Length: 331
Image (cartoon, rainbow, N blue to C red):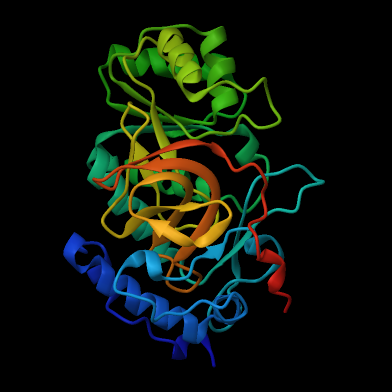
């Protein structure tokens, strides 16, 4: 069966306006579609003794452990030609996400951006993502590059290691009162803000993680306090995304993330991947309905807390990376 023969279970354009009361229906349709057409997801459901018919709630849907993206090719139909890879050292086994259609990815992150911030055309978009730019196949670089393109502002762009130039540009933007969306990896934001302390009044600063193996680990609260003080902003905002997803959640400054309508986060016990709840503390499980030709149901390795209104907080990483039962699947 070729990819072009595989039709999604609903019109993709319907995704972007999914109502909370409709989410379960869309998720169930997606689960059946992917179980039928995705060999990895299908075998995981079978070998882990799970079922698609266990109940009428999203927590009853089987979730694929995220570690499978490191050793399995997770896709539907013909093997896609577009590959996103996670960051890591040369010794690490990185996650690989094969993406059939980048148009779906672009529509997802552009609509998500508009939900939280308005049009990218209203901003100068600045990316400070040195470790991501220095390797290929980064989904984050792809997203920010497209936002830069849509922005169209003359100073929009990536600033690799030239902190002096970035400082000059930010001062110019502040003087001209230009709305600026400044996203950076944590260690680079620390380095830049320590060297060029300033007062930003028209700039939104977004950190997207990236401290592992670079500097002494800071708590999120300590990181945000340092950056807020150095850059003169009241709040540091955050982006939560990953290679294995095609959607993002954003925190607007309080450490609490909110999802777009087509994305939902649940919580489960670390030792039991089938015991999921709509709220509470545990391992975060993500439904990303935009992940049509991959897997929309992913059990992450992040510990967090999900609140009754569907927002969530990230608390750290699970004690061990591989969920129980991950060794079941060998294709």
